[in-house]
Structures are given as C-alpha cells and as structure tokens.
Image 1 (tube, rainbow, N blue to C red):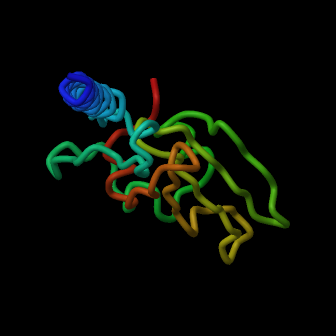
Image 2: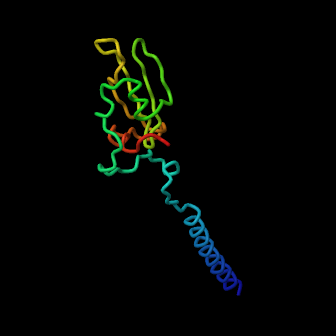
Image 3: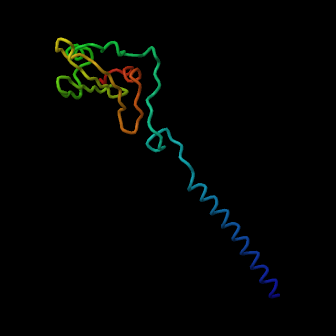
Length: 141
C-alpha cells in the first residue's frame, strides 16, 4: 500500500512538473516576443530618407552653381546659419529631407559665388542623402 501511495505521489508530482514546464514555456514565449515596428529608433537601424521620384526634383545643383549670396537668397530664402570663412562664406539651409550646405568663395573679381554644395542628414543617426535627394524636398516651409 505504501508503495502504491509513493507511486501515486510520484505520478502526481510528475504531472504537476509537466504542467509547470508548459506554463513556464508559454509565458516565456509571450514575454520574449519580438515587437515589429516601423520606428527606426526602436529597431536599432539607421534612418534612411524616403525614396524620391526623379520627376519631383525641386532644384538641381546647376540652379546654385556660380550664384552670389543675394541670388541664392532670392531663390530659396535666407540661410538657417551663415558664417564667414576667411574671404568666403559657409551657408546652411534647412530642407525637407536634409541640411543643404554651400560654400561661397571669391571669384576673380572678389565677388563670393557658390563653389561647393553639400547634403547632410537631418540627424546624427540618419544616413547622408545624395545631393539630388536633398534638393528634391526643397526648403522647409
């Protein structure tokens, strides 16, 4: 009789153990599930700019090449940042898809004209867009 009682207790404990493992396993799976999100700050991936259609380009680099500061101001407005660099000038504009930057350098007559154009990301964790992608969004309104 004692043997049967011990066997019953063992079988009962084994059954409880199995159910405990099942409950623990299910709760572990539910607790460790992966969250799928489009938010790049949660996914750990660098942000990328949305793709553009080449027909939606607002400006091209040619629109800026060789222009003076006054011509640039009339085309896209005043810069968010302007800084003298020796005889030249650095300018940064806030565009929809990027920070659009240019360096104006003196020409043969001493007039500052656009010499170099740059496109920078809007945040440190984003990839730098191409100049074409940057110019496609146009200035922030």
